Length: 338
Image: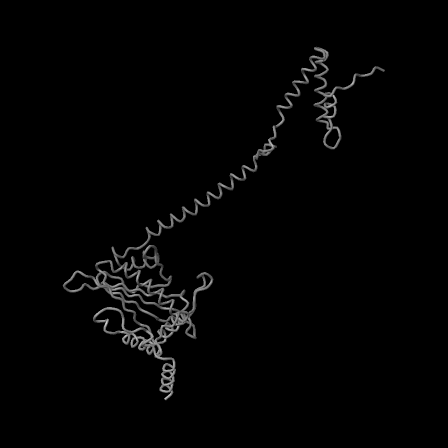
C-alpha cells in the first residue's frame, strides 16, 4: 500500500474547514472543499507544485479580501449592520417632526385667533358682539375669554348701547367673581367704546347657586353643566362722555347690583387674605408715643434754631428720669382704669 505524502498546512486547514462549529461535517462546506481540492489536483497535474502554491496564494488573498476588516476603535457594527444608525435617524426625525408640528400649530392657532378676533371699534351690532363673546377680544398683550353661557341683550350703533349678560360657572367665590368679571367687562368695554357710535356698555354677571346660596360649577372639564338657580350678582356700566368745551373723552365705570350679603362676603374674603400681612391699625399707645417724641424734639430746640451754632441742650437733658417715667406710666394706667 503506497503511502500518501503528508498534508501541508493549507491542506490540513482545508480539510478541517469542512467541519461546522459543532465538529460535524457540513455538507455545504464539504462540497466547497471538494471543489477546491479538485481544482488543486488539476493544477498539480498541469503545473506541478509551483502552480499549486500560486493557486493557494491566490485563494488566501481572495479570502482575506472577502473578510471584513474589524476596527476595535470604530463605532460601526463589525457585521456591517446599519440597524443602529437607522434607529437613531428615525428617532431624530420623529423628535424634529413633533417639534415642528407643535410650533406650527402654535403659529397657526395664533394667526387664526387674530384673524377671528372681533373688532367692535369698526362695527358694533348683535352679530359682531356675539362673535366677540365667542372668540374673545384683544386685551393687553393677549386675549380675554368670556363665559360660554351668554346673551346679547342689546347692540346698536343707533342707540349707542351694548349690553350683554353672562353666567359665570368658574369663579369659586364672590371675590374671584368680582376680579374675573371686572377684567372681562373692561376688555369688552374698551373694545366697544373705541367705536365713535358707542357710548355705553353694560355687562351683567349672573351665577348659579344651590339651595344654600353656594356657587355651583361645571364638572368633568365643563362637559357636565352646573344645575342651580340663576342669580344676578353684579352689573358693570361703562360710559363715555365728551367734556363740554374741551376735546377730552372721559370714561367712567359704575358697579351696581351688589347687595349687602355679597359685599360682606367679599370683605370677609379680602380680610382672610390680608390677615397674613402686618396690621396697620393705629392704637392710642402709638398716638401717645408720637406725641412724646414731638415734645422731646421741641424741648431740644434752643436759641441755636434762630441764631445758629452748636445746640444748647443734649438728649439727656430732656429725657425724663427713670422714676418719673415710671410714675407717669402708673398715672396713665390709673387714668385708663378710672
